Amino acid sequence: MRRLAIGLCLFLFAQLAWCVDIIGNRSVSVDSLSLASARSIFGMRQVKWPDNSHIQVFVLADTHPTHVALCKERLNLFPYQLRQSWDRLVYSGMAQAPTEVGNEEELINKVAATPGAIGYVRKVKPNDAIKIIAIQ
Amino acid sequence: MMRSRSLRFSKTVFAFSAIFFNALVQGQELGPGLQAHGFISQSLVYTSDNQVGGDSDDGLAADFRELGANLSWRASPDWLFSGQALARWAGESDRGDLRLDYGFVDHTLLADGDDQVGVRVGKIKNPYGFFNTTRDVAHTRPGIIMPQSIYLDRVRNFFLSAPGVGVYGNHAGMIADVSWSIGAVRFDADDPSLEHLFFLNNQPGKFNGETSWIGQVMSDIDGGRWRLGLTLADVNMQYQPTAADTELTAGRNRVRPVVLSLERNSERFSITGEYSQAKHETRGYQGAGLLTSGLQNPNTIEAWYVQGTWRPSTDWRIYLRRDEIYRDKHDKKGQNGAVPGYEFINFAKDWTLGVRYDLNAWTFSAEYHKVHGVFWISSQDISLFDQKEYWDMVLLQAAWRF
Image 1 (cartoon, chains in turn blue, purple):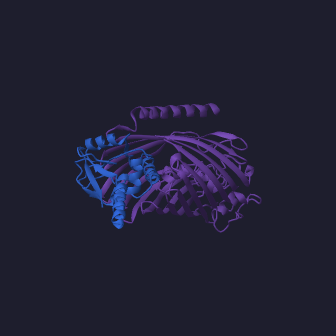
Image 2 (image 1 turned 120 degrees about the vertical axis):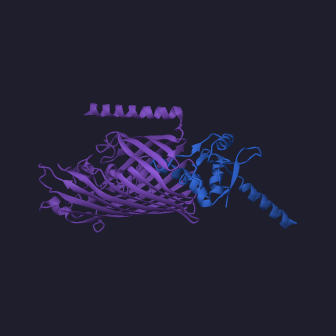
Image 3 (image 1 turned 30 degrees about the vertical axis):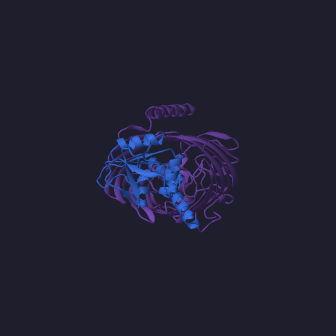
C-alpha cells in the first residue's frame, strides 16, 4: 500500500513536471517533434515545416514561469541559453527573433490565428482552437 | 576638429533616432515578416596609464559608445534580407562614422526537417570564435570589452564583416546540434589600424584586401551544456606603396588563424575558453631597413582566455577572466625586434573582474582590469613611447536594446 502511494505520488509529480504543452496552429502538418527539432525551432534555426510553410514562433518573456518551464522541462536547456542563441542570430542578421507576447491567453490567440504558428502554454482548455504537438 | 566631430555625432544620432523612434512606436514587428532591432551603449573608462576608448589616462573618458539598428525582412520561408547600420566611438580608430555593419541576402537551399543548408551573398559578419558576429552588442558580450586576446578591438573594423559569399548549414541531432559555415570574402583592408599592427605606425601607402577564406564548425552538445567550436581563416592583403613611401616596397601579408572554442554551461555557472594561433607571414617586401627586415621574419600570434561566470540569480552575473596574447609564441618576453625597455609592446596579460546586472532591456556593468603589457592598445590613441608596461583600467557601462 505504501509503495503504491509513493508510486502514485511520483507519477503525479512527473505529470506536474511535464505541464507545459507545446501548441501549434491547426494548419501545422506535424503532430510530434523530436527534442532536437523542438530546440532547433525555438532556437530560430529551423524556419520551415515539412510542407514548406513558414514557422512562426510565439514566446513569453524570458522570466515568465511558463517560459522557464518550457526551457527546463521540455527543451532541457536554460532560458539564458535560448536568449543568447536568439541574440547571436538576430544581431548578426542570420535569423529573426520570435514574437514575444504578454501572457498565455494572448499566446493561445496568436497561435490559433496565425498559420504555421507554434508556442506553449501551461494549460490547454478543451475549446482552444489549437493543436498540441508532442515531443518524442 | 572638435566641431566636425560634434557635427558627425549629431548627424549619426539623428539618423539613428529616426529608426529607433519608428521601431519603438511600432514595436519590433514592423509588418508581415519585417522586424527592427537595435542597441545603444555608453561607457566610462578610467586608465591609470595608457589610453582606451578616448582620453582615459588618469581621467574619465566618456566618448566610448555604440549605436546600431537593423532591419530584416523574411520575404518567404526561403528568402531573408538583413541589414544593420552601426556607429562606434572609441578614440582615434572609431569616431562615430555611420557604416554598414552587414547587408546580405540569405537563401535557403535545403530544409529537410533537422537539416538546413543555405547561402548568403553581400556584406556578411565573419564567424570567428564564439562572439565575433555580435561583438558590438553589449548584451551579447562576455564583458564590457571583449577578451582582447582573441577579439582584438584595435583591428575590429577590418575583421568584423566583409563582402563576399558564404555557405552555411545546420544539423539538429539527438546528441548535438552542429552548425557550420564557409565564406569567401574580400576584407576592406584600407584601414590605418592594420598598418599600426603590422608596421607599428601609419605608412603613406595602403592595404588592399585580396580573396580570403573563413570557416567555422560549432557544436552544441546536450542543449548547449557543452559548446565546442573550431574556426579557420586565411586572410590575405597586399600593401600598395605611394611615391612618399621611404621604408616600404609593395608586399603581401597573410594571416592564418586557428581558433578553438570551448564552453561549459550550467544553470548558475559557465566556463568559457578560447585558444588561438595566427601565423603571420609576408612576401615581396624588399630592402634592408629595420621595418622590412622585421617583416621578413614570420611570427605566430598566440592568444587565449578563460572566463568563469557565476549567475547568483537570473539578473546578476559576476565574472573573472584571464586573458593573454603574445606577438610571437616563441618569444613570450617580446624581445625580438623590440626597442630595449619596450618589450612589453609585444604581449599583454590581463586579469578582469566584472559584474553585470540585467533589468529588462537594460544592462549595467562594471569591470576592473589589471594589465601587464600593451599589445592590444592602439598606437593610434597613444604614441608607442608614451605607453606604460603595468596599468589598471576601470570601465562602467549602461546599455539598452530592442
